[in-house]
Amino acid sequence: MLDIAMAPRNSVSATETKKFLRAAHGETLDTPPVWLMRQAGRYLPEYLAVRANNDFIKVCRTPDLACEVTMQPIRRFGFDAAILFSDILIPAIPFGAGLHFDAGHGPVIDRPVRDRRDVEDLREFDPRTELSDVLDAIKMIRHELADDKALIGFAGAPFTLATYLIEGGKPDPFKRTKRMMYSDPQSFTILLDKIADMTIEYMKAMIESGADSIQLFDTWGGILTDSEYRAVNLPVLQRIFTELQSLNVPLTYFVLNGMHLESVAEAGASVYGLDWRMTIAQARHRFGHDVALQGNLDPVLLLTDEHTIRTRTRAILDESGNRGFIFNLGHGILPDTPIQSVEILMDEIRGGKK
Ligand code: 1CP
Image (cartoon, rainbow, N blue to C red; front, side, top):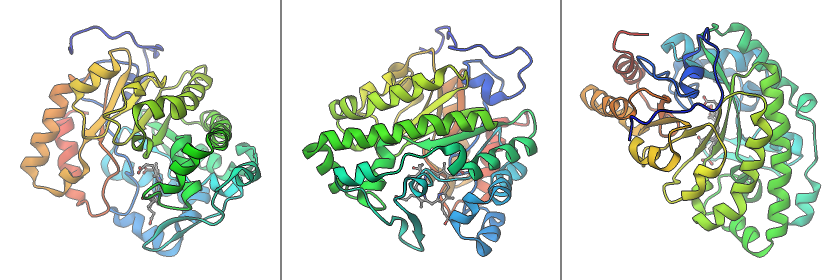
């Protein structure tokens, strides 16, 4: 039911100009703030131009390059939030697991985590020193970004990061991850806790460096049953969100393919990111009215025609009532998305209004 009053968890100052923060605190706005997952990336010619001379990890770890590609989609489309250009896998490097990207094969973890000893061998590190380049990028971006735009920092959820560390790359079909989880639950829990400890410090450092909000990406959380999710994943998520709550910034949790996970609503985030499989009404039913929602246009719709993009976008806007709502895609923008589709999307959302 859309007309139940929301009780925002934290208040936002009356002079706050960042639409993203106002919506994240539950306000009703004329038009919702909008940003797109993976908004800096291969569909932008200016991104490809930077990548032509720099490999992906170098772009992530060189503050002025990371700042430049973070700003590219903001300059082009005027999105309401910038998301730091980095990757959820970057912490694998200071963990000592090694990371490189193979053209065509995606990420590769050089020394996968397969048993208790590997878990114990992961280095504990201080993100403030060992990921200081990422934090420097945040400072630069916050300096360049207009005051009315929010800057989002992020990390992988521990479960999702663990799947890459264990599988050694793209976690498909999760054989090793599930095997460790089922047959050596103690090592699996130690691994998730180790990642969570790092994530808490990393996210605190991002906020101290100028991030206005944090998002945890749980791309693979949906491979679990609800009871597995509750037993294994939920406790670390709750620990992270509880630890970060005192920083008083919106905390977003995005799980892909999580329709069957009833316990997701207990994670303790203040904003829930939705993929396209759930309607906004279904999400309100699951998450209640004292959190904000973010989503959820199917990215494939941006490969269709103008009429279809407008109709499906309008349906989401109407359903959301623009209250406590941040417009986004249901997952990352696809590399073959035409620029013009994003322009149509922005025009439909803003309808001539800012
Ligand atoms: O230029 C290139 O060739 C690299 C492509 C690319 C990009 C643009 C990768 C490799 N990562 C990124 C950036 C990235 N990744 C961001 C930047 C901010 C943004 O604009 O949104 C973010 C937030 C991520 C997060 C990320 N990386 C996730 C979680 C979200 C999701 O998309 O599900 C995951 C799973 C990754 C791993 C990863 N990094 C890159 C690839 C190709 C992948 C997925 C590999 C796989 O399918 O397993």
